[in-house]
Length: 278
Image (cartoon, rainbow, N blue to C red):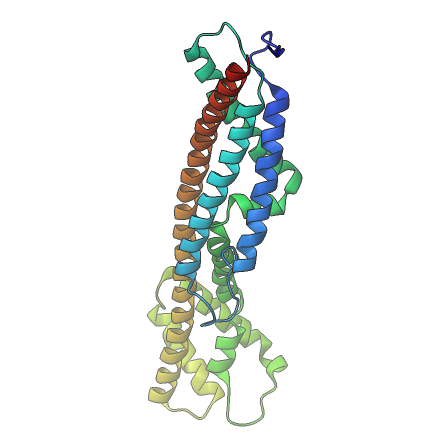
């Protein structure tokens, strides 16, 4: 009859934990690369090309959950299957230790991915967030860009049909831009500022009162529309990031529980195999 040695002096099999964590991290990386290949973790920069942001976001979330379950399951199973045998330990205690091995393996693999793989790990951990972060990266500066780049609307307001030296009127352009920025921040253009802009347009062009008023209204409406679109884009990005964070939490939590479950499964298989050899 074969004699199988075991180390019952320690409750934690760190070798099994690190082996499971390494396998989990490697599988996460492989599945992440596969996700990029399928386009599940990226979004096309071309408008109207490929899947919509909503579809890509849903696909990324599903792929993130698959990555977590597959990697955590593999890591937990290996940790349970490779750990030492604990003779003369009550089965409830064995069950607890296997569960702890799975959770620790998941924790080590997650921390290792974040620390050592850096941006790559971010893509793995935030697979669904790639779409949301891509929107956020462009939405947040868009609001400030509208406020800072009011020279375009100022030029539209003061342009004439003849030759115009823009450098000579740089002071007027800055003044008009400041008025437009204030109106956007306040949410409306004050009547005094509106009349001042109308008089400035009449002084720079051959437009009559009604035509100057119409130009001011059109330019202000265009600036307000662009600003509102930027605000909506930023708000959508914040909402997408919030939902992504929630689904990230769900995926990671599911991975932790699945790692614990697979560790108990692997541990029981190991004990049954060793018992059959005794």
